[in-house]
Image (cartoon, rainbow, N blue to C red):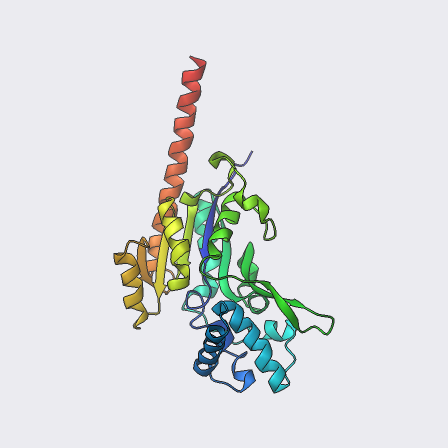
Length: 285
């Protein structure tokens, strides 16, 4: 009988963690006749003027501007906006390669996204097939296939609830069960077997929780950019375990660190199994 694989969760932010910039910047915002810098400035100002959460405000502002421009925002329109997303080096080959490395160690790696970006855009991305689930902002669509209302908002604080869902093996809509007690030994993926990849301020609560509970938090940054300073600050502030360039190619720093962590998790699992056998001996004696 084949040995059951031990689950490990890799959890990623999307924008500026896997993709080089915000997913809306590639096609969605330019289709409104705007530059990304101008759009985000106006959307954030609208949110401020109306005492709205910035994520909620930007979702509304997209629908507002599309209506004014006569653009029909449909689920397919969002999905098609993923076609021009540019990823950091090695991202598209990363998942299959790291899965094989984990499998050789007796580890089953599940990949998740927790992002303030849009699920409808991620659904059209070339890497969507690699994820067990995606927790992102999403719209409710009406009979005319256009957005009616935000179905889900994911910001810096709400990101943490999805960590708990992954930890407990809960589905996207199982909200009440998040706060129900579950013994640690019954949780499918303990925090110590979670690795969180993020890039900035919206990831800090999730990074802190992951690290505090024995998992690994990694701040990635665009190589040769000002983002490196922000990532190093997260490291110096003890928010993350590592600050590394967002280069996912084989043999790079990120690849080496992740493989070393997987080696460690496999060894810890093996040690736990040996200790469990010793405990059984004591009980039998």
